[in-house]
Length: 177
Image 1: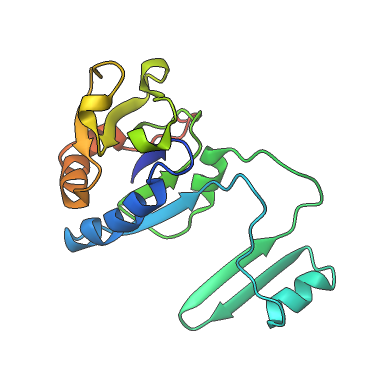
Image 2: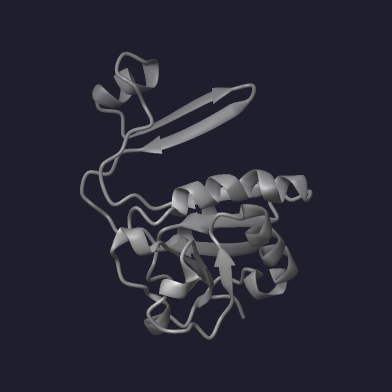
């Protein structure tokens, strides 16, 4: 399994790039999973639905299963910081790629997603685990990166670069020998 992180500030285009990479990798015959870090409260449930009603009634865990989908939800009583490696270990499907959105400070190899229009700084100078920068404005990068610069608006090219460099993204848990 290969794991690649996508790091950058809010508004940089991480979600759009990941969304576009999924079909680009699938067209190349790869199975893909995604782990997404959310900085705020979010909900995948909707008021009135059975699982929402169960959660609102106080259930700590809810599992919804159909012939085509399984969803596990766990309510946390207090805020928690999640370890990306523990989340990767929980994935049960055998996949070729895990695309991890967020977890900017993790030890995962990653692609920085940067847009000049966001007004945010780049992270690659201080992040040795950034192996490439995907941007829509390479000439505006504040310092020349000593790593590949990928076209943020060419997800097929980004997918090709990932496949060509797959050995750099082969996942080994931090406690593996």
